[in-house]
Length: 321
Image (tube, rainbow, N blue to C red; front, top):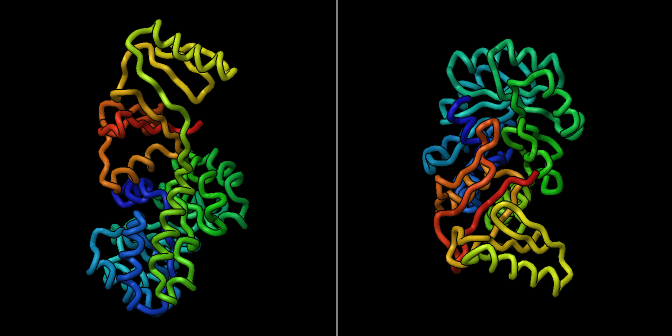
């Protein structure tokens, strides 16, 4: 997988944006950056698309910028000259795909059926856009398509929003989700960049779907741990259970048999995507304790602690099942 695709996968979201006024391009890019979503697919549906890409890439080179709705080889040339780092098309145009591959630029063509996907595989591609996602059958159809094409990852776009992005992103064959709800045209045209920043952050939280799973209390030894957990279980009529390292009073209160990470204990935060949560936390300036990362059979992270304690508690994220 290309470095560009790896970056897109860690972000998880690709704002799809139609710009009519290139003067709004750089303020928009800053709003995306402030919303911890430094990525944009600028469509070529308007004459301002090319100039907008050029201004963003020159002013903010750290933002990942692609060109969308690319239909011709001439548009590929224009997008690359403007600084686009990847190309997206609504359908599978073999001439455009071959031209992008010749130029060694990552391309994500639209595929909505097995024939399209087989054409993509024939061209050596491993990432395709699934468009229009909801109208074409949504996540159930993607899962059906994914079965016979094990090497393909999807970028669903169309009909995806805050209400369903988490379900899409929880499927391990989704590279990222594209959508325009993070940058609504009315906000962009009005220059309401604060709203765009807020919507980007809300979209991230919708995708990551953070929730507290339990608090853990450190104990000096197993006997103390059992007594503490038994207290909560008996006084508040909570289910009691034992694991190899701890006792639980319900699923929310864990008491460690011996001191673990954190001066007092730890707090567990669940998420739909540990990989993307780690990337988000790192964009916030936080660091991950690399020695605590656990991975699944595919080598994807499912568990990790932050390096720093919060109020005497270690904090770890864990992949939702």
